[in-house]
Image 1 (cartoon, rainbow, N blue to C red):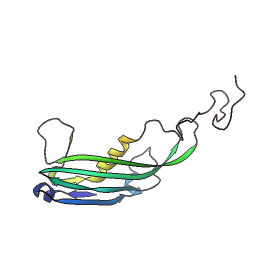
Image 2: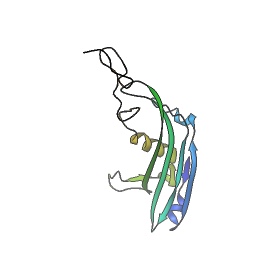
Image 3: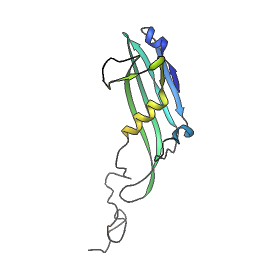
Image 4: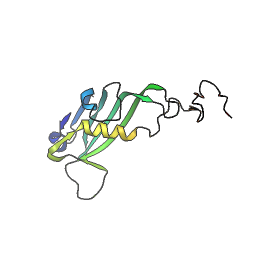
Length: 147
C-alpha cells in the first residue's frame, strides 16, 4: 500500500487511519517464510506539533516446523510498531523513515518490521525437549532406551 503523505507533512493535526491486509501474493516474495494468513495492518499516521508519527499493529499467522522436535504447527503473532516519518534527513541516523516524494510504501515497511521481530529459534512450545540424538525418539512423547 502506497501512502501519500503531503497533507500529513504540511498540516499540523492531520491524521490518517490505516486498516488493510497484505495479501498472500505480496507475501510470497519473501521466501523461507510460510504465512498461513494475510498480514492485517491497522494503525494511524498523525502530525502532532509538526512531527509525523506512524503507529501500527500487525496480526498474522505463520506455519512453522519446530527446530527441536520437527513437528509442524501454526502460531499467531501480534506486533506493535512506531516510526517517525521525515521528508529528508541530514545525518546518518536510522531513527527516522525517510519518505521521498512524500510517499511511503507501507507494505515494505510493515513486512521488514515484522520479519525482524520474529524469533530466530522457532519452538512448538517453550519446554520442547526435542529428539534423541541417537534413535530420533520424540522426547516430548516419552523417554527412549538409549544410554
